[in-house]
Image (tube, rainbow over all chains, first blue to last red; front, side, top):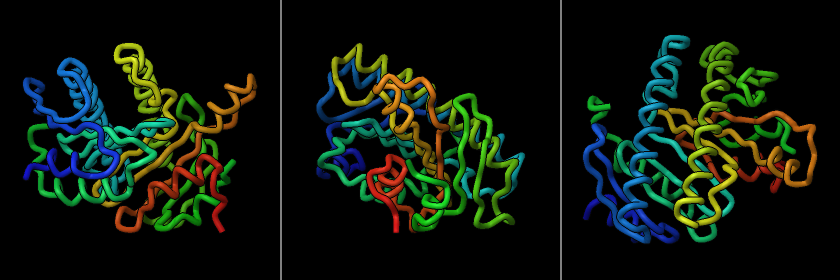
Length: 118
Length: 133
């Protein structure tokens, strides 16, 4: 099974998808329209590119910092959380999802994902 | 509201810090000065302030476009690094704004080691839902 299928099977995951770092492709499953999923993938990709650039700047200040290279990021709202690791994103319903489990699963699954295309 | 000392009691806490919305570091606690220093925290605070602002803008736009509610305002932004994560929160500020207050506390953040990081506990402490013993 793909990581997106695995994620969607977890409690509280309402949508999940993948995007290409170069920005020309995305795929998704779950409770989003195609257009909304496209917008979500663009926002996730933009933020991923941003935090990777920032991580490189941080590395200059403090070499071998445990934050570099960034693996992903999350934004936590009152009802929903967006969690992104490498080029995989998912949207969580806070009331039903375990954020710790999802982050742990994604970190483990994308641990060896190449980052040379970022 | 969480204090820096409370944040330092989270599992795997390496540093805790306060910063302005414009990114300036105001105060900090550092558990391992040989691994993370004040200069690093200052840049990290600026990074987190920028990402909170961008995420807030995106959440605002997303809610308008999709009519899905529950993203805005962003309560926490988390950067998951290779070995460490940083979680920052503006929750208390948003709460006070919604009460009409104009004098707002700083943003707060905590750096955690990934292996033992408990993100939900960090959110709870940053939001003042769970005092940590």
